[in-house]
Length: 204
Image 1 (cartoon, rainbow, N blue to C red):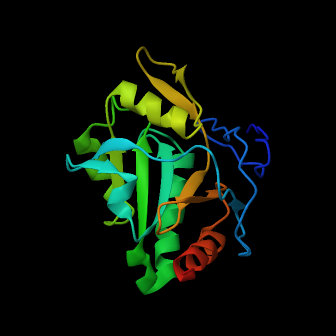
Image 2: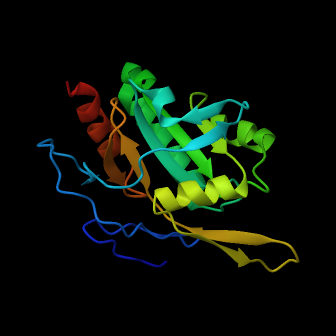
């Protein structure tokens, strides 16, 4: 288990695929809400993406305006952090009850070579049918990861051609107006995340 302290962000918990937290500096928070995760209101990056969902539909952040959006970067072969994060978010949806329909969880693959649309379609909605998997060319993934300050790197496996990925642990949350608001730590359980999403959904 390894740790990396991002400037002005809380320490992200890393495990399994050797995930690392982002290293950017958020602007001063403007919200007075008592969030349990890191308030990154006014962050100068993590602004948007242009990718394709598991059904072949082009997607940008604007497609989900009116919903709170949770963005997580991972890959389907990840042995622990990715599936536990997705399961955690499924628990969040249950905590939210009817409000869950106003939340969109997006899983952006860092491994487009293996995470084909068919693989994403089988993997992502298995946690909750409302979840969407996003992918693109390697160049597109590189560009989006750079925009979100997401670290990732291949780690060769024991078998020829096999590998895992070191990558950032944690998720970004956007409010229904499309503004980045929170950085969510991995492994805290559903309740704090549901709490913060309710605050964002209740805001005018």
